[in-house]
View (cartoon, one colour):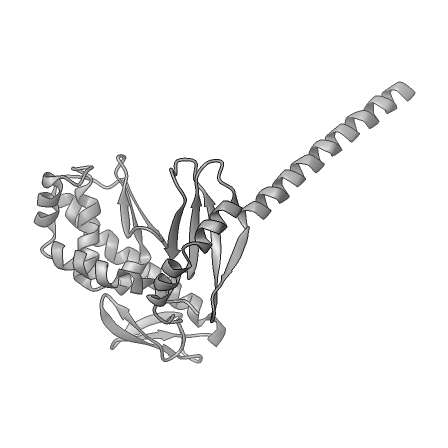
Length: 265
């Protein structure tokens, strides 16, 4: 009986040790994932967010327009200290990019935001029935004031999905292709994507862009259903299902980053 109890105690001790080790590993990973340094300038501070990437060949700095932070891409075997030193050596570049950021436009009462390029004013109507509805270029929001930002954003994502899905399926049908799935995301580096399996993804922030710009991004990804490249055949096909390829590309180049300021505080 004593032997059984002793073996049981040893077994429980071993299990407890394993659990503790797993907890330590989890805490360490969480700590590493949230390891953010602040880079100080004369009048402001900017977060440096480290992003390890085994495929990266060198340290890369990228401005995250959505969060007003600097992403530091770290190649394999590159420490955060090395990444921070690299960022410090490029403070002038970082400051120039930060100066290009526009003031945030939060989703609050009386704020004006574009819907497919047309200005709409947010109106908080606390005593109204319903949730969110749009009429006469006004976005009306019922309920408590603290819920306005979330409700407006939820409504915008629904509108973005409705607009994108309708256009994407129409364009896919026009070129004799079918879409397997459409995902709406808050992407930071691209407005849309297409996989070889026929799955498309788009940024919900396209709802703020002019109609012809959204149309182009959708056409671009749908064209990839047939041409998974950017060769002459791809651009010819893209032009067949979108009449404003060049103007839309130019607009995104000049104004695309503006779309990230909506909804920020």
